[in-house]
Length: 224
Image (cartoon, rainbow, N blue to C red; front, side, top):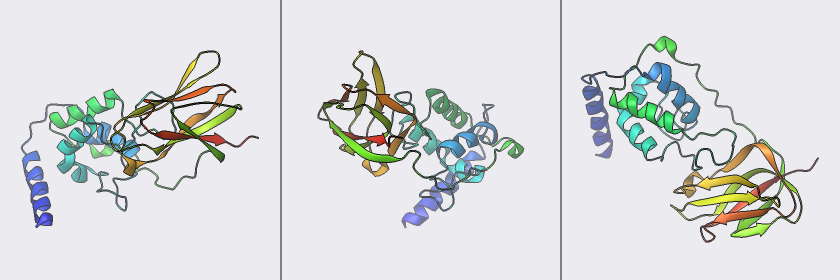
């Protein structure tokens, strides 16, 4: 019964899309496919953990759902607030990219010229980008007893739906943003790897705000 309902919903979406008035120059082939390939395709592909969005016929029936999910920042499930910490493989969307998707959907979600589609993404598994020998647990606030090079960070005990901010205050008073989690979803837990290891001196204060929001772990790079 559920399968029949889903099939009917998709067929209705396909039927209605044929009558949508196109009012936007933004197309799947030129703009939207590039966002999907870089931000969504690791899951939304054949053989992935979710339905494929790699072709226009696959993505078009889900256009309105895609818009709703990105506007609510539920998808892509990156978790970290954009611009608070510089991470590798950042799948979060900027406000401009969210607006692009919304305009595409509201303008009829046109396909455009398939010749403009980018190359399909490479789905080879990648190893951890930095060797790590230890984790430093942080709950509330700690002060570093030795200098460290922080390669990454991950949530340890953060409740569903919680939001927290992690910062590093150096002895000179400068503040380094480390991580800001918003509406945390444990099922999408990941390690966040920095674009470059952060060197923090002895005495640096690592703060989790609010203090009772949960705990995180700093992933400390092996000394060379």
